[in-house]
Image 1 (cartoon, one colour):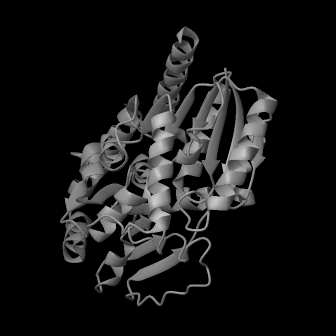
Image 2: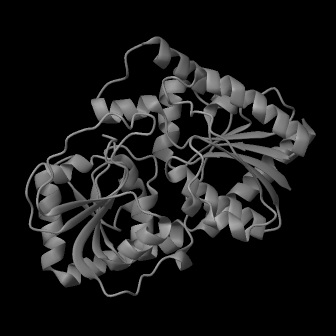
Length: 366
């Protein structure tokens, strides 16, 4: 089977793409990959070098959630139609909503990695104002979802958000994201520090919880500090002495940090799935998680939860694990087992293969 997949290079979607594309090609499928957003950095494309059969088409078209993306979306749709006509895939797998209604006679999957409205509600407690940009975005998402043969979400919670804010898709499926356990080191001796990974500029990641008060634990915060496309906007952060801002890291550098960290703290108030806690669990870190619905869906019993968005309780739960090594190890083992059983890349790839076969068969019957 030949699958055309779209992705972006800005966040976790690129890691998801790496696992999915690698698994599909290893299973004997052909893949054409088209990426949007910024051109990837060399460390982001190292995995592609071992896949000589991958047809990769990087572009710099802006992403649909960006405020000035309308022209780019139109041009990227035309570009995709040309690529589709050239390579003649069997299935289209879109990681953006705006391509769900492309006028092509092929089965289409749209994957809902996240969206602006559910993000806004989680961060601000209300839906965004009805500005022309928001109105156009909501229309784009709704049209793309309705036109797709199948809509996939990475959690049941995320699928519910789509139905709430954009209407019920004609067919839907939850496929949890996955990572390859062999990529992570779960046997390293742990050091006494806490790791958190995420975009520092993104209020949904809620990393400011670490900046609200001085703590006893040594904390390493890893991630971009400035928003893509708005790098000129410098935000002044008052960082406590126990917290180190480490900037963005490559996958290899992150794997090293996961292997060393005793505790991983997932602070997000909004997270449709969350690859970083999964990577930490596969690395033998004990998980401390914000009390949000997705983390409960994925990690109930596999981590310690702190009171929602409460910096004081985050520090309290971290100290509880730091001071009780037996409890910390027990939670590390629970998280590791949950990750190995539920959230592997092999399982994810199998479920997507089955979805491709189902919509292709339905298209032939239709």
